[in-house]
Length: 247
Image 1: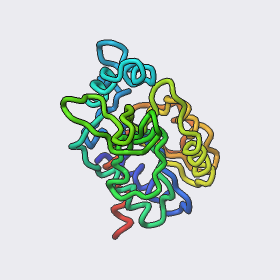
Image 2: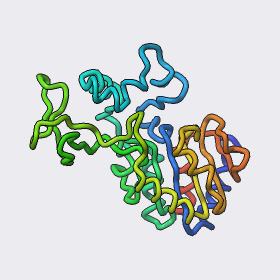
Image 3: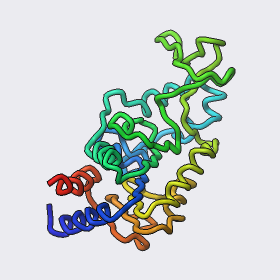
């Protein structure tokens, strides 16, 4: 670890110590160390060749061609072998110690909860929950090799993952909760996000409550207004920031 990174981590450690209401805002980069691709990063799904990927993850595709939707979704959005990484565990530890009040995530993988985080606001929903498009029942779909499109066990309607697709708005209730948490924060840590996907990124842009820390390998539009910018592994940084707290 170079001297600049050590100094930055020490600064972050001091900010956490002084904070009474820290909030974390994370994007796809939080889960890359768990083996889940950063789809909007270099070489990710959204920069690959082939037919428009945004179509396959759209409400329109789900409605008019559910077979194509589920083929693409199951191949590219489901990672059953993925497990929480050091960043997830560090955030859960910060919450258990009373320092971190909320995790706001753009991810749909559920790894924050698996690591032990309790207060998680999922802006784009989660793959761990599904509901019927016909009757609205939250359910575990009937799935088999002979039935590639999951069906509701109650009414036989198509079951969809409870995630925000292209062409759909974010859940208003969750977004308002996220706004309220960030308004309360005296320290906002944004990590693993390009901070370019709106409207979620506007949450960071509207933060005026105290210190802003950005931990991301690539530049973001809010670097100039941040109190601290760290270009390093999120898991490494958060784990190191916690290490001396325990000594």
